Length: 228
Image (tube, rainbow, N blue to C red; front, top):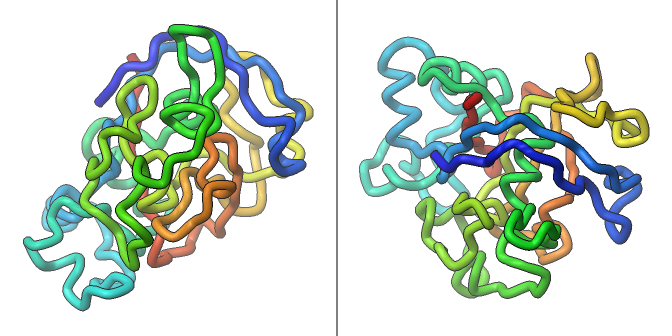
């Protein structure tokens, strides 16, 4: 895991979608977040323990035995729902990150007090995300040059990641300024980070999307967080 110390950061973007506005300052307590997305090998241990449900499908876009083959142990688990992800995180003594925690870990350069559009900076560089245009997921941490300021990997591309927050397009208009946890209810959950085929606009650190909490899709994975 990597540690994100307490402090204020700037959340949102004035140049993105309407749901990324208004830009606002958020104070977060210190927390830890996984350096990498949860892998097939890690998730299989939870399944073997009888805690986690098997992903909806064992294949990926181009690989028929993606989940069960040791060849893909270090690739991100996919086809898991929000509840599946939360169950795994709880099993390992962690939790899903909040939307605010995810964005700070992905984007905030504490050294200069500035916000990055992509985890590494404000100029898009495809080579920091992938090699060419892949047709499937990559092993976690394949592109260390794309790490966030705190050292978290794959926060742009590979798979979309579940967060703990319910989705509300207008949440930023009345979000608490300290440790926001998202709305009490909402339509689906917030997902962050983009997919292996997404264009640079969709890989931005402020990009907010929602998926039904029960969705178990080819491009949906997660990482975990915990309190200090």
